[in-house]
Length: 251
Image (cartoon, rainbow, N blue to C red; front, side):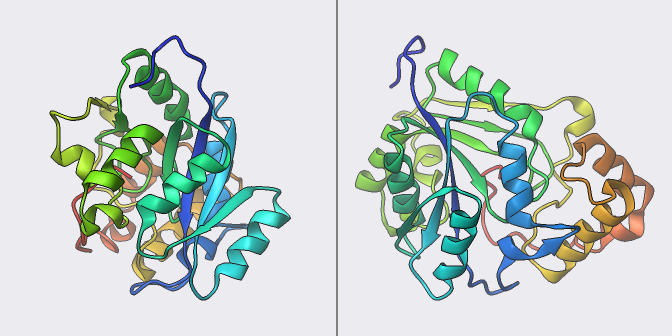
């Protein structure tokens, strides 16, 4: 474990790939004036504690699009196995000598940027292996995890632990790892809402939110998004019945 008084480098590592069974090129879909991935990065840049951002790009058809994206925006990147997402996160962290990884999804345009630094501080002060924001709408949370814990997961876990469910091994082995859940305020505790983009319905919801309340600004306060959905039940219902294909990892 990391010592709480030790200065450590922190990097946000974002796994990217073009292919998807539900919606093609999700991170690069345009919402307002930006891509989803651009909005994700804008939120991450609000942090005063994150030292670097690294795209962990899948070595699969379409990788050139993400490489160009990274170069155009002067963002560091690595190329790794398409299926072994856990390994991609590890090499992304090692690329910039980071000891702590902030994991965010490339298909989430409304990351809760205000919560990043608070979560990082709690993670370090409590000497945790994995910390996460819990109870928020699906698609706005992040995880803070030690590189050492990811490497242990990769070494000791099975194939399913090396997939996109990167912290599954940690969650399944509470005696080996120390974890922390940071709960949001009551008004933001809305886990039943979907603000990720995994399907065409999700994309419609996000585009509607940005058109109606964001006015193409780069960021939208989460409380305003929640209020908008509560006041527009037809919009909220559009993606409310979509089944989650996996157990939530609070992303």
